[in-house]
Image (cartoon, rainbow, N blue to C red; front, side, top):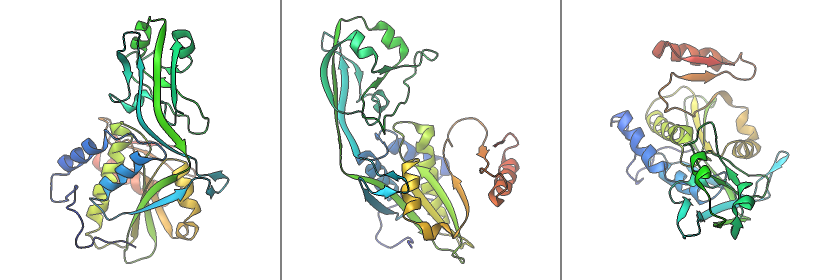
Length: 295
């Protein structure tokens, strides 16, 4: 169990501040960080969130069984680029971490454009966008770039560098339990694994941190458990280590995609008949008549 304790750093999501300003400030801090399913980017993100709430951080070693999966190797990256023949970086990781396929193995090579093409990913239908690609479970490497840039590449060869590591380490996740009058719990989950994307999921990280801070000062019927972890493998890791806790969970929500200009969207549980499937639509439609409810 964890509650606010004296001596903690000053909160970065003060409930007395304007909620919009506090959330925006937190998103601005989180946005530049290169996050993946493991690595220093996740740890840095959780350290920032811990300034708002006294979350407990867990490290789970590579190779640890989690049901029929296992914790993968840890990935970290320092730099990456594609240089043309003049030495100019035409694709630069320092400009956007989306430029590198997440979990790319290290590479240093001079390649012909023809050889390089199979490692380049674009969205022809959105020529100015940088796509988001991963290779968590298949050791490979690649770059993501606007399709308009790819069409401009004419040099015979390019210098390619991905300065990354993929080795035994840990998967990192965090949680924060706010005890209520009952040991029955409400679980709120937000994924930590996406790099440099505000809506998905800097917004979810910021909202859960601010919500946790506010709820920690309320008298609550249920206990509230917040979990910040990478998607899929992080969820499986938490579940495998909390089998007794699961039996106390009465309601649960995943918070993501909370910053776009559209209406609220709620996706029902698989069965569609849980109590939360009745509660959330009623609350959302009371605030936003355009709210979407999806199966």
